[in-house]
Picture 1 (cartoon, rainbow, N blue to C red):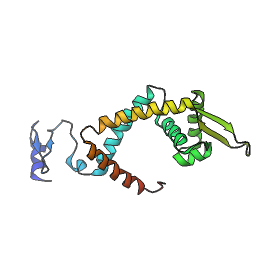
Picture 2 (picture 1 turned 60 degrees about the vertical axis):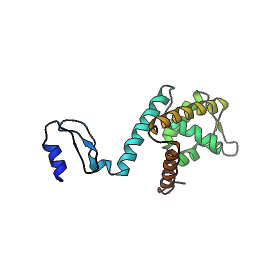
Picture 3 (picture 1 turned 30 degrees about the horizontal axis):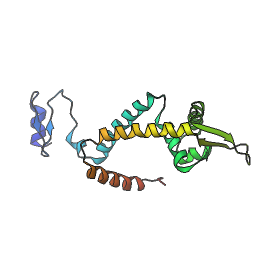
Picture 4 (picture 1 turned 180 degrees about the vertical axis):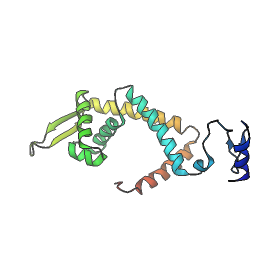
Length: 175
């Protein structure tokens, strides 16, 4: 323990600072430990959790979830899929995919048909209403993104995106 952290722990409700110049809260006050703030993985996790929560709230207002958006995006970007291929592409449990596809079909966002060559296969394709919904969901996601990334200028956002894309490509199991 450094003398600064010992002092901040010993003071009543006073605010001290760490070696990195960050303010620390006194006992009983909420603050993130500097040890965690020094971990990029922690910052990614907290930022991601906040962004995901905000987007989930916006989608929920429309009666949709993140998986619904993921399915619509996959169908719009890659074309019609056998339902089981969507399971593999998105890494979703088969029973969960069936529920998502049922919900999206009931809303008119996707169409499900039996494959004429193999009646066991269910083909899923996005409808015009699904494309419209996806465009609206994309706008919601971009609004959340803009709010989360507000402290960054345009160049910093491009840099962050590029770096995160490289990290994402390096993750195991990422196509």
